[in-house]
Figure 1 (cartoon, rainbow, N blue to C red):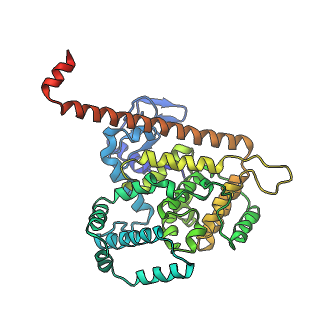
Figure 2 (figure 1 turned 45 degrees about the vertical axis):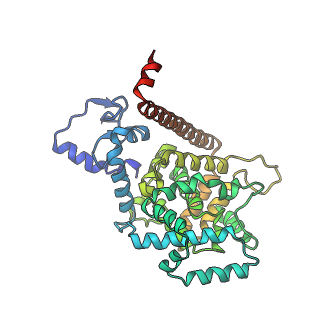
Figure 3 (figure 1 turned 60 degrees about the horizontal axis):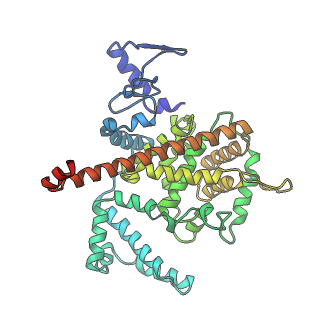
Length: 399
């Protein structure tokens, strides 16, 4: 199954037939439509909201098409979740944010011992949301209410303050994700990856989408690795994020999502953003995606190893798969994860080179978009400043 099928191309074909649509261009594969946004390239995809054909992510994200992008992202995410209602009511949002606020404040004041920290956390859990709100100062309550009214700010906080919680491979001196006493689980996963043969289908960019979900979850939860989460919080929240953002890992064989094959880095990025949805991505999805891909580039970059070294040059990436494995439940997702790990580790040299080239090309494209976005904001700010000037000052400046 290609990503085009995910975008309901079959439905678009039926609509084209109903209006007697006739393509204007012939390709080697037959008739094809031009992109309805740039009108220069053959279209690869179809917007499920307005049915306009488009060729790439830049065309999909142009301002003229922004109205239906949000609706499409929400609709796609709901479909991948099996039609479940993913909306969050006000009471649930307040309860969740209150818990987050409480743990953040507790982290700033280190406890003397682990036992004291655990006891303090248990005591806090006994309070209701209303009681916790009463413990906040008026200024803290106002700040909390602003976050409740504008949840997209929370999404920005994950990445604007990312230096506080960097993934394990971005930590200075860190070379592995495990904590004391958990190393054996990671080593066992890497040793077993060759027991399952690699998939006959090219899943390298599905693996990239999975790494996007993994890296985002680490930022979202404010942890270095899943091993750190297991000791301090419920890993069900992490698993829920994986189900939301990488549903192909959990889909049964009869589910169409199980046959999804992402063809390049742009496909993986677009797929991830659609499942992430506007509520999680905030106002600057490009900036967030750029940081995630830069982190992944550091994770999958080959290392120089000695000939006698038992570790692979790509061991950090394999550790990431092993870290995902620690929170999975059930045989199916674990078996699929072995497929991804083996496929990634056994890629031929040429395929690996192409993978890194596409990943870095996607990073470069997003960097250019981010520079353009910042430049546009600066111009807009300058224009607003000029508009606010006294007319006489404007006339003097024009002389």
